[in-house]
Image (cartoon, rainbow, N blue to C red; front, top):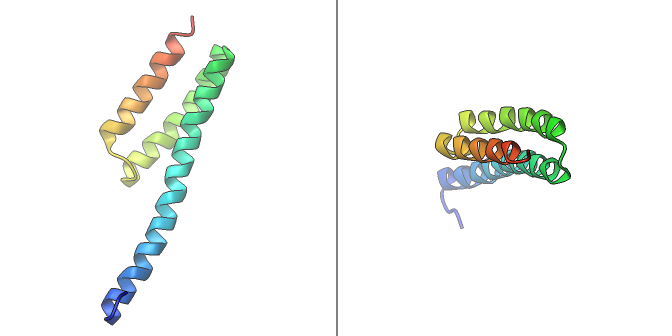
Length: 87
């Protein structure tokens, strides 16, 4: 338990930051999940539209530091590869 005023404040800030970042990560994971769902249906046009939305979310999360830029690039690359493989 935090004993000093400074430590109490940092604990409160950590809780708030964790809540915010958890919501951001959830948004990011949901975007990827939605693309994967559309890919399974086999509709390439819908998959591209869904990917475009997910791409902006992924880039936004990378810019905010929620995930590393290389991880973002990797996820986008794998989604595009899955869409291309739908032929």
